[in-house]
Image (cartoon, rainbow, N blue to C red; front, side, top):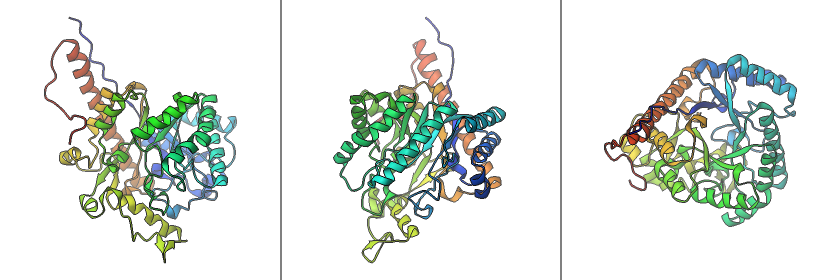
Length: 413
């Protein structure tokens, strides 16, 4: 009987630079944009992250969404007010070599289907700049949203996706890039009662969108950057979601991971259900949307009344919450990815995303040990999953030795 050696394959660790938006003071970074990237590479090295997911965003002076209206303000660590040319790329690549920190991908998280044509054109032009920067920096992927036109119903948004988003994917293809979509439903993106404001929010929509992409020859450009926190928000569990993709023949769609949890508040669910707070949020004043951006941030009560983001490792180990799909079972998450998806773990990135509100500290000295601890947790839990998978599914299986127990099963609660 042949014996397969024990060869665990851990995934590649990274961190989204929005974890600390103001690492470099605004007066310094605005005058010298690439200083922010250099200092983040140094910070990543210090906290033990071998890679970064470089966050791009419209500059605060150019954004159509005020920071006060955002649940989690974005970071323009990659400043693209001016084109990112070969000279700028050389400087960043030199800093990467000096620090030994690599690049998993670039991230620009915005609504690419926004209703206003002028705003949409601005965002698409910016995305093309992100694409160009990705090529110059040698990465093969950009991560972002699809978004939604809230003035249209879902089927109408599919038509709009075909009309305005497919051209972006063609531009990605021309540059040899993959566009990986994060599936957050973005319920607080507007003050309407729309809850799904990113149409790529679950496997059913992913498959529908991918079929459109295939018709236009860009199926290979459309992939998912899976974030389990959003599955928990919508009452899903990772194993069942992955099993569904495999059952439907779409286990190849997930190409990367955001490592961010969600802790559901049973009291909030009891009050409002999984649709979140539907009225009297404070984003409407006197029967119309408040003109105050800070008031408009209350639209996020569609989400935050029933849950809170988790920075991996900061929430208590809670087996009952795992079984109720009210918190991420990180070990089973990493096992299920290996067992059910068409991925090569050794080439797959785990990108830590920090949005745990009480710990969103804009203080390097205080935040560094928090992020260092979370990264260590993610690395350890993935290594444990890699060891279990290799031992059970490769070594023992090759020798005909049965695996003990049952484990978590898909489609069961």
